[in-house]
Image (cartoon, rainbow, N blue to C red; front, side, top):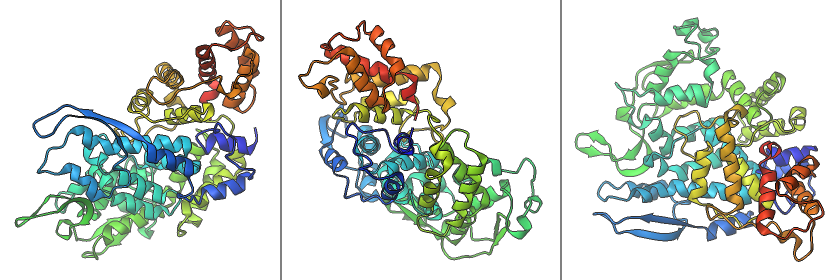
Length: 513
């Protein structure tokens, strides 16, 4: 397997039906293009996004008429104040309307995974959505999801991590999800501060409270460079982020209310202005607005533990479940060396992809349901339309797009996706796409041959090459035997033809990337 073949499996959502992905470029040239996406130059995705229609249906109630219609996308490019009108306290809105922004982002995510020219961005955005997970099944989070996806994750996916951290910290979706919108002096909420250290930056391995319970005891703390963090750092960081909230109509006191726009805002009267000590660094009292929180972001973003934690997570995502320690260490160094560059994350991704370890990492990861669905659609070339039925079955298979309930995000280790029920659900996804159970597109497996007569062996060889980029000859006799076909019998039955392709995609080999 060449490095380009590995890249097709690992840096994209699979080989497209028409093999034009690399356009005769070598891997390095293709990678540079992908790291600098031109979103206006994505004609196939743009065409399909503009024509996408999604159904919405609900019964009549006291405050609204019944709805049963098919609509174009209406929220995907909206601002937060436009989206937040769905949360108008003066007018009841059907829950299906409030869910609509999340459904639209989920559908567009599927559409981009299948059709976007900028495949690496889709892979990396999927990574960051899991790293900075929010549960958009909560309608208040879901209403902010189009902005979170567009202005936070996609804008910063190849950029500078510190800038990305601040964008996340000030995003309405995260402020609502981890409760920092209600955090204020005298009653700081620790949810966001704890996940900030444990999941977003330094990682659980850097939590040293089981060993040290006073900041001075942590190695390096007295020099302002502690080896890790303890609960005191979490408590102090929570104080630093007080007053970072959203305009949700909350009571400011004295008869004043916040506007109801959903936008980020800083409320000075809610901020704890007294001195703090975080990661061995003193913060003087009465700093300028937001300075305390920004100091925490800077300290964590540039910490050695953060470099190692993110290097390891990216290597696990792009290389294998158990990447070599030498690679993680080298990637962490690139992370630190590029920490002041606007394209820090791109530098890190480039190093991983061009590494020897990446080029030798064949079949090292299991496809998660999104990857399985997109790679199968790209291989068989159906005219694909996303649907809520497909999204529901992906959730049954273990991947709830933008609805994972805990801040950890979806697991990224193969063992999480290989149980008996998980495999049955994966087969269901393939079967349902093949036979159009969810209205996602008709599949004619005989179409590539036109009116030509084709034998069973020729048919299977063609589709094995499409699915695997090489004839998987060991599957040939098993597939033909299952279909009760001889190698030289002519393929005539469209249903049998479809199911032969589906069975080939249900094999263990197609589950790997």
